[in-house]
Every structure is written in C-alpha cells, then in structure tokens.
Amino acid sequence: MYRMTTQPRQESVCDYPRPPRLEAESRRLSVRVGFVVVAETTNGLRLLETSHPPVFYFPRSDVATEFIHPNPRRTICAWKGTATYWDLVVGTSILPGAAWSYENPLEPYQAMRGHLAFYPGRALCMVDEEAVRAQEGGFYGGWITSETTGPFKGSTGSSGW
Image 1 (cartoon, one colour):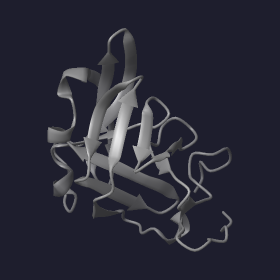
Image 2: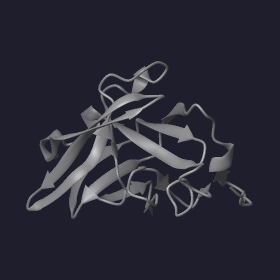
Image 3: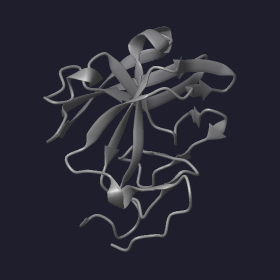
C-alpha cells in the first residue's frame, strides 16, 4: 500500500485507526433517490477505519422509514457485529441492499444502534453541498469527498490489505 500526500483540510485514510473510531458528525448529510429525500441529518455519526473512506450513519428518526424495507442479507464485522441490510423502495425504484444497520452492535459501537448507513453508489449521497463518490468494489460503503485521500480499500489489488 502506498500513501498519498494530503492537501490542507484533507485527511488520509492511512491515518484512520484500527479498530475503527466512531464520532459525532454535525455537517448536513443527505440521501436522495431521484427527487425524494430518503434521509437527512445534522446529527450523524462518522465511522473512521484504516484504508476506508468514512461511513456516515443516520439516526433512524432522520430517515423516511416508509422507504426502507428489510432485506434478508446479513454480514458480520469483527468490530461492530452483525449487519442487517435494507432495500430502498421509492416509487418504482427498488434499490436492493442500499442501506445497512447494526441492530445490536458490539462494544464500543453501541451508539450505532438505531442508525442506518447508505451506499453512495446506489443513491445520491451528500455531505453539505458535495456529492459523494462511492468506494470501489461494491462491498464497502465509504463516502469519498474532496477532503479524503486514499488509497482506499475496495479498489483493484487491495483485497490483501
């Protein structure tokens, strides 16, 4: 793995911790499908993990829950526990597994209970006024913004990191 040079106001994911760190996020986060706002908050959580762009979690109270429907998929994270996946259904748009949550997160990630994260490759995700780029690979749900530099896990050749 190589390290990219950061510019002022940028963070390198190489500096993010392992195990991951969870912190409060007060910037405006939003998720849209077409013209429909599915989630919007200034009370989010930001998860930082080595070699991953940040993942943002929305309090369920700031998510239009009528658009989320259970998906049978489950995965396990050694740090956070079992992830439950959700489909987004907005009008005729069905986005399978576009969101996930940790319904019973492990310590010290209990603050994630009652929060949802969204894949930016499946819906339009924004941090303030900036549209987010999706983390490569389809499995990880990191949000790449102009403030974040890689290299990012998920890209070709990163499976052994």
